[in-house]
Length: 102
Image (tube, rainbow, N blue to C red; front, side, top):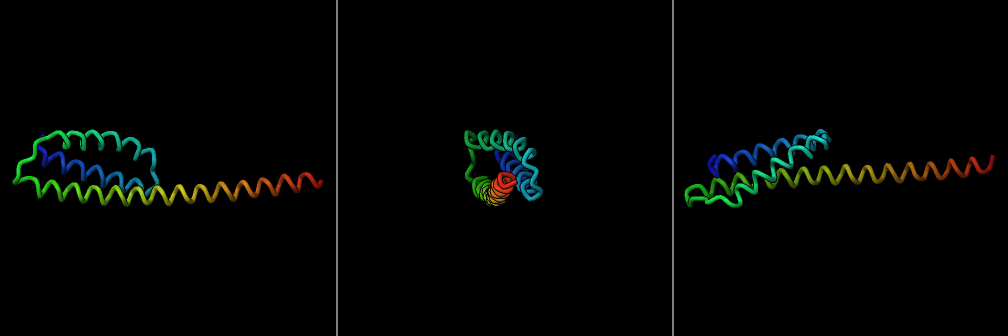
């Protein structure tokens, strides 16, 4: 597989990861990340011709943007989970206090 094909594959994988993040399908992301990292590592050790370099760079920049978007979605989800846990913790404390009064 050529380096250009690998870069196209990385972009495709990044799109899948981004879509999974939008759908909050964290299990799918976990599975996709392994192959994504393997593909990126293959690009890192490959020799790139001067003619291919600009195209490959653009593909990798787009993949990086998609990954940043997916990371932001994951961070937002994490934040919402933390808030939900805090709310549940407060509710449990209130319930314990009420139960103690009975």
